[in-house]
Amino acid sequence: MSNSKVSISEKIGYGLGDAASSMFWKIFSMYLMIFYTDVFGLAPAVVGTLFLITRIWDSFFDPLVGILGDRTTTKWGKFRPYLLWVAIPFAVIGVLTFYVPNFDAKGKIVYAYITYSLMMMVYSLINVPYASLLGVMSSDRKDRNSLSSYRMVFAFGGSLLALWLLEPLIKYFGGDMNAPQGWFWAIVVFGIITTLFFWGCFFLTKERIQPVNEQNNLKEDLKDLWKNKPWWILLGAGVGALVFNSVRDGAAVYYFKYYFENQSTFSLFGMENTPTSLYLVLGQAANIIGVIAATPIANKIGKKTTFLFAMLTAAVLSVFFFYLDRQNLWLTMTLQALISMCAGSIFPLIWSMYADSADYSEYTQGRRATGLVFSASSMSQKLGWTIGGSLTGWLLAIYGFQANVAQTEGALHGIKLMLSIFPGIAAVISVLFIFFYPLNDEKLTEIEQELNARRANNSTLEN
Image 1 (cartoon, rainbow, N blue to C red):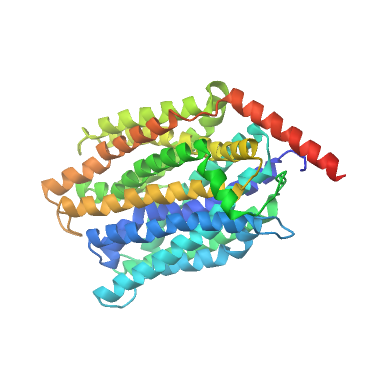
Image 2: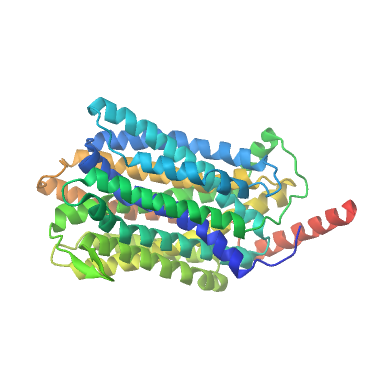
């Protein structure tokens, strides 16, 4: 194992990978539901079921990608090659997902199932190895916290860029009358950007850590994972956090389009923006502030305590959000900023905690399967996103939503609940899981010292 420290350029390179992923992830989270209902022409209940079926399968595809990554051997390492190989398929399938074919209703449903399923699979093929890369770039906890923070800053920066540019690009390419064309070419632009960012991540990063005993025994890997208590806790906490985010994200555009109704534009940095885009961009900017604050706070009070406080605060503020009305636009924006700061702060923590759980597995079992452990991160994202996305579609149907018409009071009430009470419940579930997380700073120091001693001894024996 190389003892070289992670450089600033390498941290930036690592961040570029999540900037790329997050552009599509955020567009999916915020806009895919309303794209399918208001542009593509599907009923919300159909979209909810589409999300459930495609994402459930894809959630369990993630560990398969993790297993594949652990068994990949190239001159570039185990995980970096996927950033090179999958970048173009990622972009192309992303563009096809937002293409509106000239099919009948059944044909469109089939097309949506095929393209979205492929998109989720190719997302796993590049994002699981990318996430796993954190576990082999450094064994130092401070380096990992720093890498996680860089990752999240770039992730939310990429999301902010996507949300700021998306609506202006759609209008630029499609005008007021051709939304399908506008969507297609806007996503082409983002596909080009994501490809360049993934390649930048590939060229700027390094893999340093090699396990003491590299045994490619799937049965033993799965057995070790089953015994990894921190992994299971993080899986549950991650699902709760992603349900919190995905329900809020999925309902946000509906909230402004149908509840606030007034979508008069204003100029920001030379771009025409609406209250919707301001709300979304403000959320991403606040996420970045939360990410930046997370590392120094966690270094003082610990990752677990920081996570607990942030998600509990987000739950309380989400309840307050329910009581806002159309006259409280700026208070709405203020709560969005505060909630987003809390939500943003937990993500660098949870990525760093996944790396710790990989160390815990090697410490207790004597074996390391970084890709399989880190696939939990992507799996929790997909499961949380699956539950949240499906709930959004089904709740819209339950409350009587109809696309592109004035909504009933019942539908508006349901949309408000999806921005407030329902996400708050998910945040509390995440808190309950993380309360039982066992790896405090003292235990992590013990694990780090023991693993470093084992690796040093192994290196001496090999020489």
